[in-house]
Image (cartoon, helix red, strand yellow):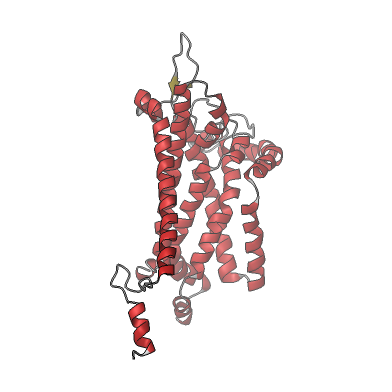
Length: 341
C-alpha cells in the first residue's frame, strides 16, 4: 500500500513548466471543469477586447482611407462642406490639447503624490498615515461629473480671478515663459483642465507610490542608518533609487487616466478649436472631450468615421500607457531596481 505522501506526490506532479515554482493542476474532473471555466473567461476577455478594437478600426476605415496621415497632422476640423471650405478633419488640435492637459496634470500631481506617499510611509505615525490615505483615496470614489461641476462653479472662477492674473504678473517679464500666459484670463482653458485632471489622478499615483515604497527592504534602510546616514540620505540613496521604477509606473498609470478622462475636463477646458497656441490660457479640446461633444452631431458617414478614429486613437494611446505602467510596476515589485541601487 502506498504511503500518503507518495499518493499526494502523484496527484501533485511538480511541473517542469515555464514557472517551476507552480504545481501542476490536480488530475480531477472537478479541477478540469474549473480550469475550462476560468480559461474560457480569460479567452472571452481577450476576444471581447479584440472585437472592440476591430470594430473601431472597421468603423474608422472611411476616415483612414480618405485622410490618411493628414488626419493626425491637420489642424482644420470642418465637418460641414461649403463652396469655400470642403470637408476636412484634422485632429492635431485635439491631440495637442490632450498632451498639454495630461502632461500638465502629471507635472502637478506627481510631486504631491510622491511627497504624500513618503510622508505616509516614512514619517507619519501609523494612525495618521491611515487617515491621510483614506482621505486621499476618497477622491477616487467621486464621480467625474461631480469634479466637473465643482470645477465649473468653484475652480474656474478662482482660476480666472486669482491664479491666472498672478501667473501673468509673475511670468510676463520672463522671456519665453511669458508665452505660456498670453491672452485674457478666462478660467475655462488648458490650464484649468490640467488642474482638474491633476486632482483626479493624484490618488492613483499616490496609491501605487505608497505600495512601492512599502516594498523597499527594511534592511536596506537600516543599513544606511547604521552607517551614520541621515534620513534624507536614506531616502535619496536607498528608498527612491529602489522604488523609481514603480513610481514611474504609477505616474504612467495616472497619465493614462488623464488621457482618457472626459466629463470633468469637458466642462472646464472651453471646447474651442481655435489655432494651436503655446498659451495655457487659451480654450481648447482634448480627444475625449471632442468625442463627447460631437458624437451626437455626426450626421454623415465621414463625420462619424472621423469621430470613431478619434476613439481608436484614444484607446491605443491609453492602452499603451497602461501596459507600460504594468511592466514598470512589476519590474520594481520583483526587485529589479534593487540590483542597480
